[in-house]
Image 1 (cartoon, one colour):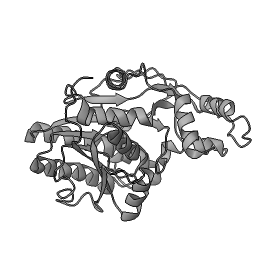
Image 2: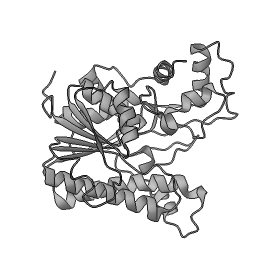
Image 3: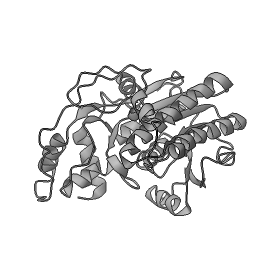
Length: 332
């Protein structure tokens, strides 16, 4: 195998480590031979993650209760070689003055702390929502440098800030957060490499909690169709591995936006898979009527290429594989 960007035993900081993607990323970084420090906002959530990792000797927790405070990250980044910044506002508040502003300031804070601490590589978890809203039955071609201007415009439209605006505000926060990182890199010219990962709908192994998308298999098993439009799926382990590759493994990944999108999916297909995988379960949801298709074309080849190079995978995992992983961890 090729030499890694950082030597094994290097220390990776994963912020937001207790979330669905975060916990899987910590797990995959440890599996790849790195030491990991994971941040959370409370001792209780940190303890849950530590337990899910069987108190791994190369993992340590750090508590950062308020990520928007100046200097909030200074202690957590000490001695760190690489950072995977996943911590973000998932409150789905409809007020952009609260969500977008704080998220932008949060990423600037950790970038400033990273520069002071001598960090070598920095990866930001952005989102598919930073680029576009999912649209069914419409041919759309997404370019690598596209942004979700629709979300930014909707988020900052004049008040009142009603609940209908909540997802637009979340999407705008991811776009603004990523834009802030790229602007920092351009203006400050830090000594570290920056990259962003843009994941779509994550499904698969659950280590702590499933979050909105990771809980979709359980929801379908219990008779409910998750309230999401059709879009691309990504297996959470594939997503986690792409983060680790960009952060510490592949020296050629520099100043890139990597789209962690596998294939478009439908809940109808997921329901069919669940019936085949768990034929005895009587509570599986009914397929939605007139479900659309995500026909968009996205620049997702780079993620698959990196998984092939570093993990020997021929392609992204299928939704069926992700469902099987979720069922295994749900013990259903």
